[in-house]
Amino acid sequence: MSETPMLSAQDVARYFDVSKPLVQRVIAREGKRTLRAVDGLSFDIPKGTTLSLVGESGCGKSTVARLVVGLYPATRGRVMFDGQDLSLARADSKQRSRMQMIFQDPYASLNPRWRVVDIVAEPIRAFGLIAEKRAILDRVGELLTQVGLSPLDGQKYPHEFSGGQRQRISIARALSSNPEFLVCDEPTSALDVSVQAQILNLMKELQTRLGLTYLFISHNLAVVRQVSDRIGVMYLGKLVELSPAESLFKAPRHPYTRALMEAIPDLEMTGRQRIPVGGEVPSPISPPPGCTFHPRCPLANARCKAEVPIMKPAGDAMVACHAVEEGRG
Image (cartoon, rainbow, N blue to C red; front, side, top):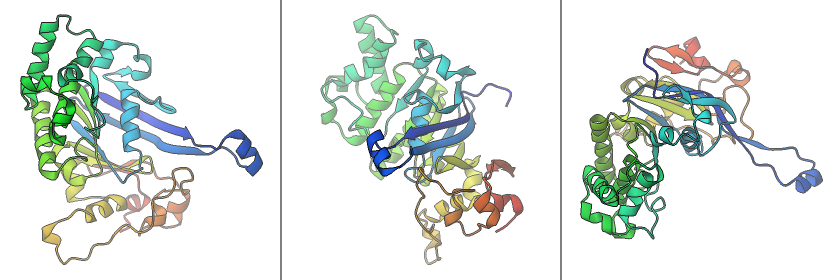
C-alpha cells in the first residue's frame, strides 16, 4: 500500500539477560544466558485494520505488545509509528497520546483505590487534553456511555463491577486520550465466553466508528477470527506465517499453523482423528538450530535442522518454512 502504515516493525528483537549472579557463574564455570523473547519480527499494520498475533504461551506475543508501546526498548530493529521512529518520540506527549494499551487482566489493571471517574480521566489529565474539571467529568460520562456503561458508574469503585464491566472501563480509559492505535493484550482471556463476544463486538463497533487501528494479541484462534484483517502466527519469538484472516483458516500453510487449527473444537469434525503437536516447546534460552519448529514438525528434513527459514510469499501469505517452499506435504 502507498499509504504510510500506522505501525511498522522492522527486524525487531528483544533479548533478556537471565544469567545467574557473577559469583555463581564463576564457581559453576558458566557463561551468560540470554532469553530471546522476540527474535527479528517484521510486519506492517495499515491504518484502520487489525493485525492479530497468535501462538502458544511463551512465544513472545505479550513482549511484542510491550515493545510496541515502549514499555520495553528493542534490543535490535525499530518500531515506526505513522512514519516516525518511536525510539525518537518517547518524550513527545502528543505522539504518545495517539497510542494506548488494553491489558489482559481487568482485575489487576484498574486501581482499586480510585473511583472509575478518576481511572478514566487519568490519561486526560496526564496529557493535558482538558483543563476544566466540569468538562473532564462530561468527557468521562461520554466515554462510559460509549462503552455501554452509565455516567453514574463513574462514582463507583472497580470492585463493584463484573469482569466484563471492568474491561469496558479499561477500554474507556484507553479511549480517553483520543488514540488512533490500540494494543490489545489478550483483552478477553480472563472473561467468560458470553462476555468475550460482547467485548469483541464492542471493539469492532468502536473501530468502525472511530477509525481505530488494532494490534490484537491472543492465544485463541476462534477469537481472532472475529476481529482480524490479518493474522501473524508466532513460534518461539519468530513469525512463521502472516496471512489474511480468512485465508489462514481456509488454507493454513505452515505445519505449526495447521497443528493449531487441529486444536480448535469443531462439531463438524466429531469422530475425525486429530493429529496433536508432538513434543514440548523448546527453551528460548537455547533454541534448536535451523528451523526452531523442526523437533516437532512431521515434515522436517536435514535442511530444516541446519538452515533458518526466512519469510517468503506463498499465495497471498508470507511463510517461513522450507517444506512449504519446496512443496513437501
